[in-house]
Length: 406
Image (cartoon, rainbow, N blue to C red; front, side, top):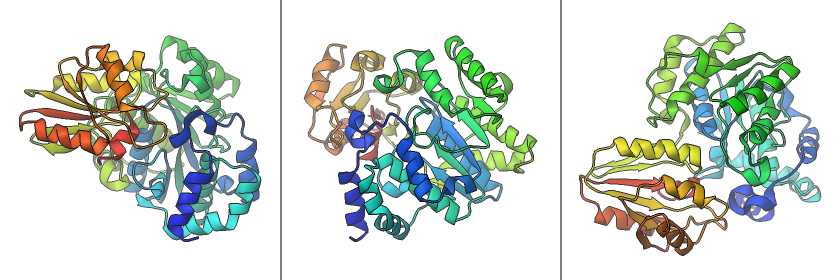
């Protein structure tokens, strides 16, 4: 196989939550341990920060990476999902893993993956650990895929665990209460390893405290400890919480003398997240006249903040290009969207994408009116044609919608 055939094989042969949803979810870590043992446990050679949370874990991971890069460290960054290129998931100092390394890894272990029914995510996690260990990174930022306790990344013992917040998302896997979901995320808290909590509610705080006390782990609630933040090139209103989480995490790194990060490193790192790490799709401005914003927010907690930020904008008319995946609770998210807007309904180009006609019909029940289009790009182009320079266009509803226009 060449590289492209290798990538096609990865996508087609292995269960992949990004495309398939529920059928790709594994309920234990047996395979993850089997894989890293086969790879001679590259993860034990790494100093890691493990980042979980319903929202903000991607932004938080990229901010941490940018700051640590600014401080002169060689930083591995593992995140998901990718927008355009599979290799976005695995980076060192903002540079994607090489096609050659991916090709060689898959070629070497392909029969092992097949024999043991490795999932797409398990294989990708193993690839990242192998790559970061061979490249001898100073630190690796590892973002949880979903949940925490049973996530394939949860075979590491990090130097800090981070949980950004808890919201109702992926309830079919993680539970349908905040306490249940917090319990799954708290599964990344390890014995005597400090943990940083970004946002919490009374229900989730007690879950975190109980887990941390049981593990003799120092626990830090960033929102109670950090009162001053710095500007960032990530302009979403929700980033204020993520910045506090990041600053508390950096404070622990400095206090433990594990790394040396100056205020100047922090300020510069926060201002250069996009250029240093390649992060896209977080209140990302794609045009000015009309102003065009895309955002990957896709659940109630994330969309609430984004919709409030749209309300602060000045415009004549609002155009919303909207698509979602088929396991989204539309009764929960559609009421968040403004009635006074023109909608362009579309289906993201993945098997999990919800049919645009179904979306339009459901949206109409909440007073959201618009037309359906055959693709995200067609929806987007129609919005561009209809909008005047003083209008505002928002593109979102799903990571996979944003992926098709950035």
